[in-house]
Length: 280
Ligand SMILES: C[S@@+](CC[C@H](N)C(=O)[O-])C[C@H]1O[C@@H](n2cnc3c(N)ncnc32)[C@H](O)[C@@H]1O
Image (tube, rainbow, N blue to C red):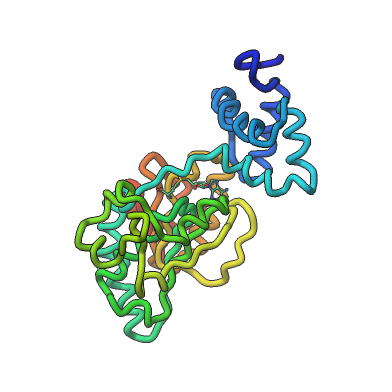
């Protein structure tokens, strides 16, 4: 069935939607239910317009050629949302500051190593919030072996995150004293993280549903508001893999509408509605 939104817009058939569903599943583990058909049209047709394609079929044929690899990434990005903000779900940061950070500080003071992971970091508000939490408790952190790995499938948001520069309005969730301590206004009036805090986060492009290059374990993993895009099987496989990446006693933080149903299999214990601890 042809599904055209208006006479001036691109041709979009049921078969095209099924192709997008298959691509999203194969490339990123993203599950697009039938109810997302119109949303997919409005998100993807922007890409068609930018590239000058008149039909979804022609565009989808292109993204599946070797020359369409970069566009494939843009297509996947068009299918997800990057909404985030500083200190989102404040309870997670309160828990991390009172339970994880003191343990991490003790470990670092004893000459050890500590790693945190923001596993779908979007434009960076999550890892930079984590960095402020660590710096507040332990200003000397950058001279120790501590890093916050910040990853996302979308290279554009990762580049923005790494730039650490935000419009004043975007920094609303940052308490004023932290803003004054860790950010400076740039020439355009935006605020940019500066100084030793910048040594903590390390930004990388990473598909959560592909292979992970990291060798070590993490004291805490934030994997929030991303598994909502995945089907049940993909979600459960991801929880299992994340649990394996936690050190014993480490914590997994998930989004407010997400939960790990397979806690026993993952060796996790629920300590709060969206916080899980790995058994020793
Ligand atoms: C709504 S944002 C969540 C940002 C942050 N974690 C938070 O809770 O505020 C979802 C992010 O997940 C990323 N994403 C979607 N599928 C992914 C995948 N397969 N691997 C890694 N990141 C993915 C998107 O690019 C997007 O930036």
